[in-house]
Length: 267
Image (cartoon, rainbow, N blue to C red; front, top):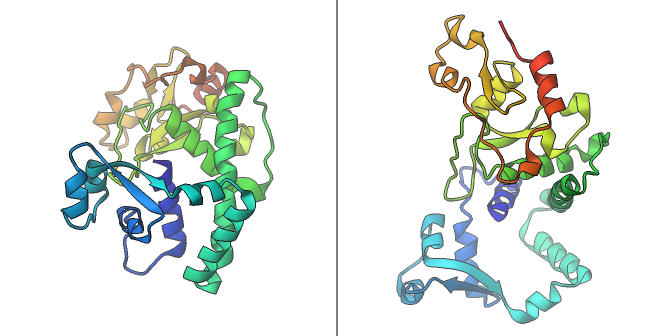
């Protein structure tokens, strides 16, 4: 899933006109370069070798369980200098000059956001997270890292409605959402967050839904007024939220209280 997310980010950055990104294409065709070796699932060895080209991620997942790098290349890539050199050669060889700095910058964001996400998860366990003002120029790192963290904690499910939808490419219906907005709290503690689908995210931010201190979803009476047609959302009222598998990541009661008092539309 992380690899698919990164591919999508880079594809949007390069933005080939009229083309849709398909991560199956490079993952399959790289094998012809002799440094990338697909690992077929049991019983699929002949199909991978003689069954024709693979054009979809669904078929790729069905046929292989992974891939491995050439041993010598893998050893070389353990060295920071070698990785930097190879990255520079690839970018300068295959991308237009106007894209090169953007790709390098995005690579730094991706790496830093990964470590930021790992830190958020670890610090909850160590109970060390504090409200921290993050410089504006680091917004992309913080935002990408926080969203990745919340999707992981809730396994790509919406904490309010329970929906979990992913495409074969790994695209997901949910995003990471702050309970107390970051602009107010400067707090990326995962316990100040939820994984929400786009509709529930908007509904939550507008105060039309909330979660009480018993981790039960509450809906605003306004969902059924003003000509709204939101019966499927109103049915969520008094239903328990989808909880993380790890109770250490349950929403913070102080954050929930803030949302109920400051945002939720009770009438």
